[in-house]
Length: 86
Image (cartoon, rainbow, N blue to C red; front, side):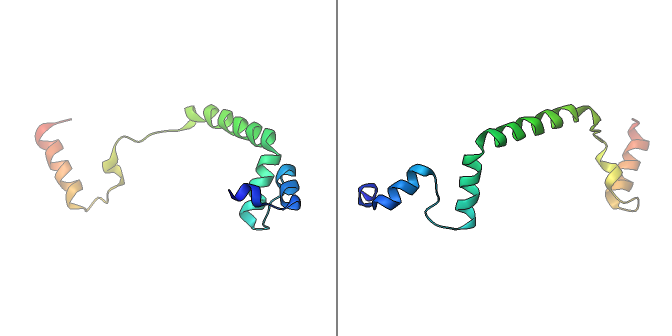
């Protein structure tokens, strides 16, 4: 049990939320945990903003418009359109 082999200083740092190592990932994690309400509030605000922008998104369902005019697939689609309509 590694938990019981910790020094009193390590136990105090764990209880206070101080990172054991000074790596950037550990500092980021401790910062997020310390400011968890701000992180949740930011996430909620960003979600509301993205939800409000949904009506502004246009979807182009005609994927052939992305193909070059001289591509074989484009000319084949035009031939099928002329032959079968639509």
